[in-house]
Image (cartoon, rainbow, N blue to C red; front, side):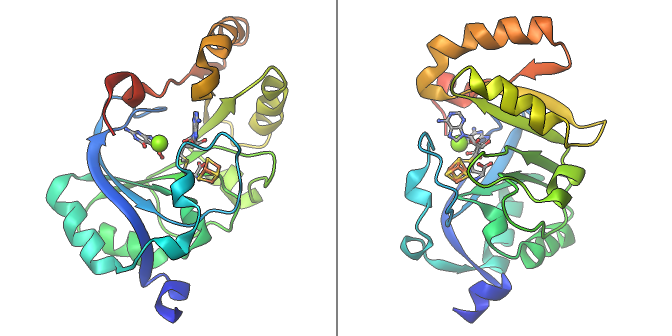
Length: 204
Ligand SMILES: C[S@@+](CC[C@H](N)C(=O)[O-])C[C@H]1O[C@@H](n2cnc3c(N)ncnc32)[C@H](O)[C@@H]1O
Ligand SMILES: Nc1nc2[nH]cc(C(=O)O)c2c(=O)[nH]1
Ligand code: SF4
Ligand SMILES: [Mg+2]
C-alpha cells in the first residue's frame, strides 16, 4: 500500500504502556509502539509474530500518536524492525506533541525519523548501516554464546565515543551466559550488563 511505503500508515502489531526493561532507561515508564515487519531473521528472536508485516493492519500514524500521548511523555518505537519503514512521519507527529521518542533497532536499514535516543542492537546476519552506528546512544549486543563477545568488541569499535555499551544475555541462554557476562564486564569495565528485567517482573 502506497501510504505504508511513505510511512503515513504503519503495520501496527501492538501498543502497550509498561516499564522499559532493558538498557540505559531500564526502570522508566514508557509507551511502546511495536511496528510489524522484519526480515533480519534472528533464530532466538522473542517476537517472531512481528516478522510478517502482512499480518499486522496498516494503521494511520495520527491515531497512533494521539493514543500514545494519552499514556506517557516517553515513547519507545520497536518491532519488528522499525527502520524497515520510513519513520519520519510518525516521529514528526510524536514530536509535535512534545514527546520524547526512543527507538529499538538492529540498524539494518537506513536511518529515518528524529530520535531522542537510539538503542542499536546489531545482528551478524544483517549488519547496521554506517549512519546508525554514528547516531547510536547505546549499543546493546545480545550474548548467545562465547563468540558473541568478539562480535560485541567489533561492533563497539564502530560506534561513537560517547555511546554506552551493554551486553544482554539471550533469554533462553541466560543461566549459562549471565555469569560469563558478569566476568566479562568486571574484566572489561567499559561494558555494562543489561537484563530483560520486564521478563523477571512478568510485565510486557
Ligand atoms: C525484538 S527486538 C525489536 C527491535 C529491533 N528489531 C532490534 O532487534 O533491535 C527488541 C530488542 O530485543 C532484543 N531481543 C530479541 N530477542 C531477544 C532474546 N531472545 N533475548 C534477549 N534479547 C532479545 C533485540 O536484540 C532488541 O534489542
Ligand atoms: N518492558 C519491555 N522493555 C523492552 N525494551 C525493549 C523491548 C523491545 O521488545 O523492543 C521491550 C519490551 O518488549 N518490553
Ligand atoms: S532484528 Fe529484532 S525483530 Fe528482527 S528478528 Fe532480530 S530481534 Fe527479532
Ligand atoms: Mg521485547
